[in-house]
Image (cartoon, rainbow, N blue to C red):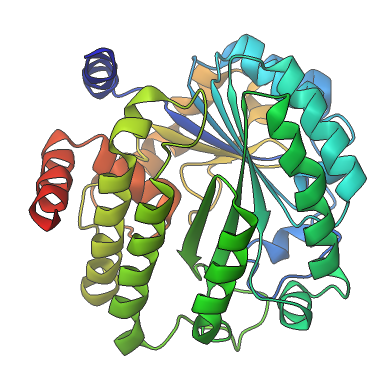
Length: 358
């Protein structure tokens, strides 16, 4: 019942739930599927730790922080950044993706940030898009696959001493690797991580030859992805996880893959998007947008690091109204799963569909 009460409270308030923070534009890989590659040429100074502290003090509390980049572990003060959000913004779940190119550094920083946010789930996400040299090619970095294996060995053992750490793998599917789905799934399964998730290529990739897998293959791939999620039990293995999403995650994500196919066909918001009030993207230099698929509408630096002034500015109101009116659409899973999660009717539908399959 506690998860249900928490859920009703979040739905009723409709306030900020998730922030994606691009902690740095720096990256030591050249992934062909990267949709943020254009940002790497921006030379505006990145937010300092002092600036991040001011931002976290001004923001309302929110539970869900997703870090991105660039490669997050290239930021020297990454544990301190996480600590600020944990202490000042009441963050209780941190997702931290990595290209796994720096095994020792990743292990050391992961240990430090888990210790500084003891009551938060730290979900370390290792990217894997192929096996051996094929992974290296897709990540634009020779030796990446071997570094990935070493990183896994170093962080997997940390779970024994860090009860708030979970480690999962994540694969981006495109026309260049979808035929290798089974071998990637089986390799990762042999390692016994906490979870293995899949995403479909989105945005404008660095390599223009990359596209989604053939349309006729998408339903089959969606079914395979759902089977993998059931195998791992959704987020059941993730310790200290947000209780609501842990309870309904599997049903919500399965529903997302159904919505994904509809969005592609109909090119519209299938479930009304909550990015107009519950999500925020913070860029490396303080720029702000409602979604990673939308352009920034303002910068914290232009509003003296005050969230309320930025959120209520003319450009912010206009950006939110565009989302509310359904003038954008995407299949970005970080938003579509939340769209389902915070629409009670959509959650009920997802749960009913799941029960009907059992």
